[in-house]
Image (cartoon, rainbow over all chains, first blue to last red; front, side, top):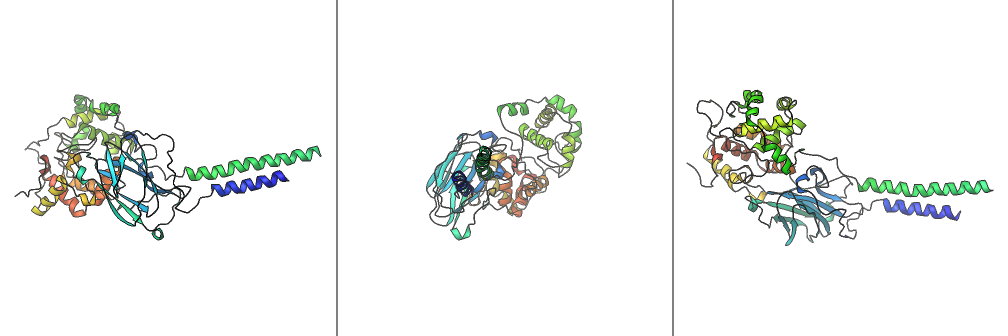
Length: 169
Length: 252
């Protein structure tokens, strides 16, 4: 009997562990899953940066992760939606040349072939203009993205397969 | 007694297996939850594909491309406004569009039928043939290019977008990718393109009915432009203003 009792507790614990927490402020640990390098020419065909996987997603522990591509001369998606006051994973890479995603005074480098995994922390809600801070070619000065940080009451938790942006489409 | 004890331990094992498998599947289902993968184009710009695209035989292209010239014109200048001019267009740009028609990533019933039975070598040869034609149209050809002159206000709007773009909306300048200032891989030259064709494609990109642009570039740009701006830019190129680098100085 002791064995069964222990095992049922074990089952309950594991099921609880597997259930998703809907809190946004899970402790954010910088996790680099698998390889941190990627073929910049094949971003649109395979891997985590295919166009259907870009934007803001919610991890199983409840933290937010943003995946985006910098390319000549756009940030894709153009407008990123995050939660204000909560640290968010930003995973960015470049499809062609070096770019710099500069938001609220912090530069996140987008280097072809490398996934930059950094933390984006915007304390106040609002719209943040994001210029590209690395000269990337003839259209560099018009390359500009946007980050919209919204307060907690305007952000609902996301389903695992859901991706959100604030781009026009 | 011995028998009953064995049954109990079997139950225990079943519970252990369930305890591991059940949460693991739940976790994996969430962990690998991704939206259905959408691939805009199967074309990948590696040195091999670029070599394959640019090493076509134009003479063979002339022979097997007879079917193409009925709509796209003998000189690569089409007399139909909604059919693109192909004369002098970048060889990789033509090659990419033909590949996308072939794989069904770009949808057009006419063109998909035309390339359905073409091999990779045929596509490279046809692209080579059209890309080698002159960008100056024969004056004897009564085609839609060059189109009617746009109004001064339209030229002003269009030349601003073509030269400078609009940084406040994240709109890069057209000529930074489509020439003549600079080109990116696979972007077609717009210098001698039919205006109505450009307008149709911009509308298709903005409504996401054409989705074969790698990394959503043209969809993002076209949906940021207003219909009036799309119209102005299309007329600007259609009237032949795109041949030289644009200036923001108002032309008379």
